Length: 456
Ligand code: UD1
Ligand code: CA
Image 1 (cartoon, rainbow, N blue to C red):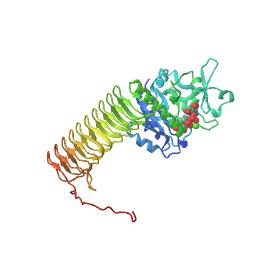
Image 2: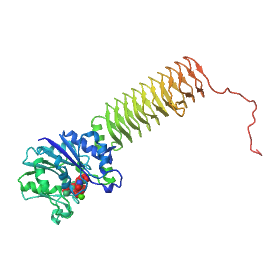
Image 3: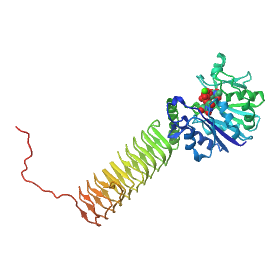
Image 4: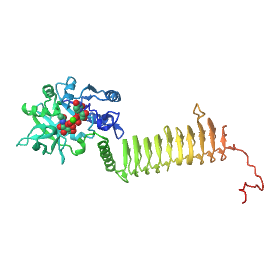
């Protein structure tokens, strides 16, 4: 049966205490709804629809590229009402999986098991879970034979029904033909005056449709997010899952509870990651890469054997093999470090290329520069790349030696094998092999009397 996915996401999320609509709240740096949409894609649904309401325009605009069916539920009159407003967009054949924009971590395998129970129009699937404390959830009412009869909401339940520990996760898989038949017949005669989607269970039973239940592999798969505490709890679950995936693939994590992957991290063999490292966007680490504590790596590729020492930040950069960076280094967007480059402490590199074996080991700013192979940049060197209006390039030749505390006033070229004297302000090109000294000459005054305090 062809699969459609319907995601209910009209809730306001008052308890988030945020301007951002609830389904836009970030989990691992992506909106909650993005996680659910990813799941829908992985399930190969032919059609995915989102019922939206509060803050809807922000949500729609964010997912414009996704080719989704959008259904506005201007007034939220319950989960049944939410599906009702989507009916005109729902195919008449096939089946629909109902998911929630604020339940981000349901696994594809759990949903597949649920959906495989619905192979024809004689059955529907219901995802339920047994909880120690079922308070607040709809309870699954079964008959003496153990067959599901109906769902009763907490607020409508009798004391004995409240004792039932099997609860409704809200996630359902239903043949479309029945949704078209049942939903228009829902009433709102209950304690909340809402149209309950859960009432379709009793309708299924009345129509002789088998209600099959299955359960998630883990309880967190069906946990929703209503406040920042639950959001943080699911963030930890998500991060733990990713840490376990990495470790199973052979990555050494010094503490799997202290790594955050907010994007995609791929690793070669024998990669070692120390504590409190944050990965964002797309990060690729080659074999034998080591990342020290407290680093942030965003959209970058690191070659085999490269070592990033603690407290370093790397963003939008391509880094070769056996490179050493840090501690306390910052590699900014547009930077390329070839094999065997060394970037040491308190060095900032921006939009620059370091050719093979070039070094800047201490205290430097290298921006908009091309640094030749094996060139050495002394401590305190600054590329003066900005004149207040425009950025200019600095070109340093192979095997050049930039003396400590040089200012390279761009645009400027230091030739191959050239040297600049320490403390020089270099504003004119330096020929290959030359020494450039650009600083005041030293004057010595003999027997200099230093100032003294009176009486001393
Ligand atoms: C619902 C179920 C309950 C189940 C629980 C699991 C019903 C009547 N009850 O209860 O059996 O145990 O979920 O968490 O279905 N939404 C809309 N439009 C609406 C109302 C809700 O889009 O008019 C969306 C919300 O954004 C939310 C989801 O549906 O994502 C669930 O709504 P909520 O009001 O939280 O349902 P519960 O009362 O928790
Ligand atoms: Ca509710």
